[in-house]
Length: 243
Image (cartoon, rainbow, N blue to C red):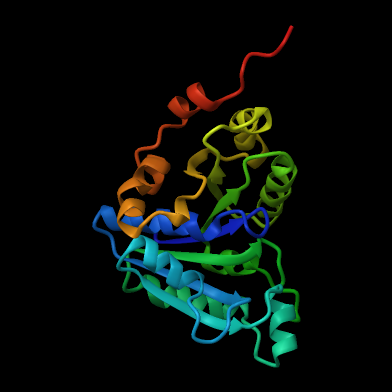
């Protein structure tokens, strides 16, 4: 799992917290971890961005930003409006490769979804993943609407010959509704990839110590955790259909 790209079905789906959980689980295995945020938008100079939040929650990771734009917009738009240079897939791939040379795991956290534009050439995170030959972790919402967004993102990966490593549910409620429970079974089908974890709602608000202790319980063994998809499905999966 040397270089892994983390994307989402959209914005505000839990990518940063999921990235932090994977980082924490990797650190617990004794691995060195770097987190790369190619384009941080919507954060002013001097304020902590997503990479810093991963480091706060997960622990001793190398946190790197390539560019920062103050307005909360897609990277290409935010770069254009700020008058600052855009980040290219080649720059993302080069930075990730350099970090990979001195770290066991490099997590590249995108902005928004897989096909959000990074520059005026319509380059996307998918282009960077292709250059890196890196697998992608897809962070998805739990409820209604997530299946279509998940299927579209997975289809975009397949057309580009990018491997979807699996899906992580970014926020799982303590009392999930019918749609959420049915999606436990349906999300892997929509993605064509396994369900690799579910983060409890509010996980990012835990103290760093509590977050690091619990992170492995939220992630499957493929990601360094102990979460069991079958056991989770038995408890939270679809209820019996009505006659």
